[in-house]
Amino acid sequence: MLQKHDLKSATPVNGEHLGQPNPSMLPAWFLALGTFAIGTEGFMIAPLLPTIASDLGMSLSATAMLVVVFTLVLALSSPIGTVIAGGLRRRDTLLLAMTIFKVGNLIAAFAPGFGTLMFARILMAVAAGLYAPNANALAGMIVPAEKRGMALAIVSGGMTIAIALGLPLGSITGHAFGWRSTFLMVAAMGAIAIIGILAGVGRNAGAHLAIASIAERVSVIRQAPVLKLLSVTLFWSIGAYTAYPYIAPYLFQTLGFADKGVAATVTLWGIFAALGVFTGGALNDRLGSLKVAGFSLVALALSFTALAIATALPGMAAVSVALLAVAGWGFSVWSFFPAQMARLIVAGGQSHASIALSLNTSTIISAFPSVARSARALSQWAMFG
Figure (tube, rainbow, N blue to C red):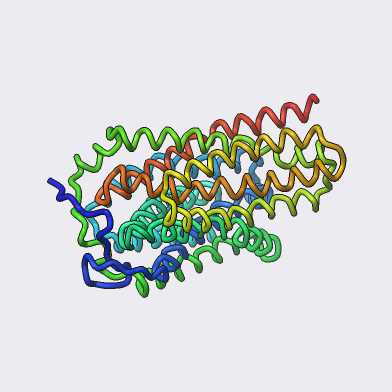
């Protein structure tokens, strides 16, 4: 049976003394190297699909399966892989995941055909599904409870920084040196992340936590508090991302933006997303996760309401309200994230934290079909409208 643990008991991520809280956030930045690498690869591939399709002699729709299969494998493998790897040292799990991710990118860089590239993307999906929830869980468990929000924000912030920096970097690299070079670049990022984990994460980090049995790990999905929080995640994800495919046409047709204006607005969204995740983490530690999560959801709803109101306003008033709404959208989506993860860690228990967070990852991705339907409806409307 698992022993009960004080939620404020923690181990320094880069130390070997078990149970001693360490307020330093530096180790979390080492863990964020991995989420940055994963986020960069995940976001950069969509703009490169036409180039990949042309080079491999495939149709664009067939090549897009690289994204579809990646998403499905990540959603399915994340909780399964986390359950299977639950008996490993926590640092070893992260090193294993990042090694698989690096190998997957190397295979992709030298893939002779579509089948090999698909295999590489499957490896990357398994690695991403294993790394992200375990990195967040470790960061949240080995700092004092009053620092947990910021630790989670830093690790999750690797994803938002990937949106702001990794995506354009990958696009520039791919168009300048070919799409294969982008996978080499991400493989190098993975290698740097491995070095960072070895340097900044103690071998026994998290060893003070009891190791749950397979049955106990699987039982997390039946815990009512976890299921309630996952339902919140599901509706948040649907609300946050179903509207995302409509950003460009909204700006084009409602506000009359040109291409550069749309690109600048999407960048604005990414900047405020990065601000949101770090602000949300800091406020979580000051105000508590329930208040921050609630405020973020209200702010998200108000942002969408403002986008609707902007359509009825004239000229610069419409532009000003819309830009504020887009900024609020990006900010509130990501300010919710560390608070929700902090709540899941408490609900599932520290020994089950990685399982609860992997289920959270799968829940977020399960909302993506609504995004796909939204994009498909949009394309049909554009064709016949």
